[in-house]
Amino acid sequence: MSAVESSFGGDFKAQHHSNAAWERDNSQHRSHLECEAVTAPRQYLESQRFQLMDAAVQPSTARPLYTVELETLTHIAIEVISTKLYP
Image (cartoon, rainbow, N blue to C red; front, side, top):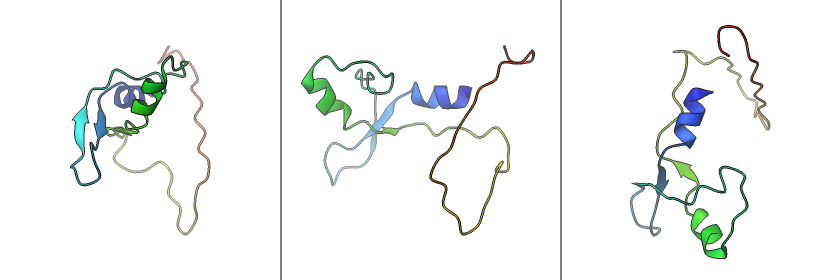
């Protein structure tokens, strides 16, 4: 989960217009990622530009944990369980 938190805590990729390249952008409007209420309508409109994260979530293993052919996954659930090794 630390790789997911690291990616979503970092910069965004943004495209300033449809013909522009995707560039790194450090937006301060993160309320839509943190489940906070948007206080200003302008913040909401600007946050719509920031949907793609700049850094990819890094894998924890070299091979996929689950593979399947000719099927489409519609939901993925993640459960975090505290253990003695990872409090």
